[in-house]
Length: 274
Image (cartoon, rainbow, N blue to C red; front, side, top):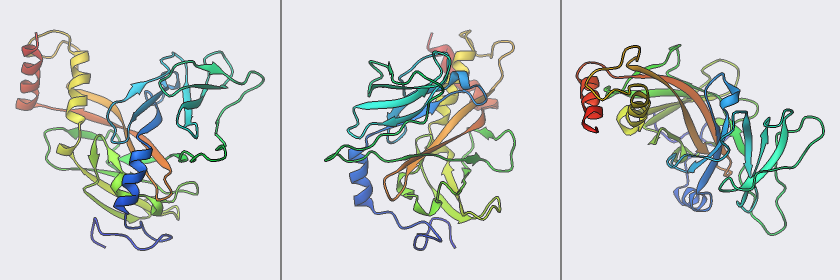
């Protein structure tokens, strides 16, 4: 099968996206709620919202404890979520803008909230946390941002997530759409996986790298401060929707870097701002 071809009917391959259906979904579900934090440090997990194309990420919780498992209410006006902010894990609710955060449960340990749609309302899509592997086979996942190549990502299928239901036109990674894709059982677990490719130049990873490096390199000159590396590790998400309207997201890390002339040009850019 050639990369990027429409896959056969559900059960074996991904179905051909329906542009009209997806446009209607995007108009109705303009925001995605998700958890963001430093890999391996749950205390940094916070609830964010973003536009359906990955832009406009906004932190709603801003606590030094885990806030996660967020789900929209059926009318899109509230977000239920789990939090460890007062000790044991409990269920909270807040407005879509993060206002009026209210604890709902108190006894024992409670989490994983979900909403039952009221009569006459349209249910908000289910959200799936999926497993992804950026640059499979590479432990550190280094990425030279001056490269004009592609970034391979494996989206793993499982008992809980069927990759044959993915709307390919909805899949986004660092602001980029899928350039090519194919399907196979990558990890040989009996479930079909998607192998996706994104063009490096289509992503906003260079902007992310510049932000991370600029935060670390605080002296306005054309050299890196002592102890500051040209390599910056970033957690990056893959998002998308299924044919039923369910949202999904997965996160992995990349070791971003520039070197040589490209790095010197970026440092000069920093110096020119001051």
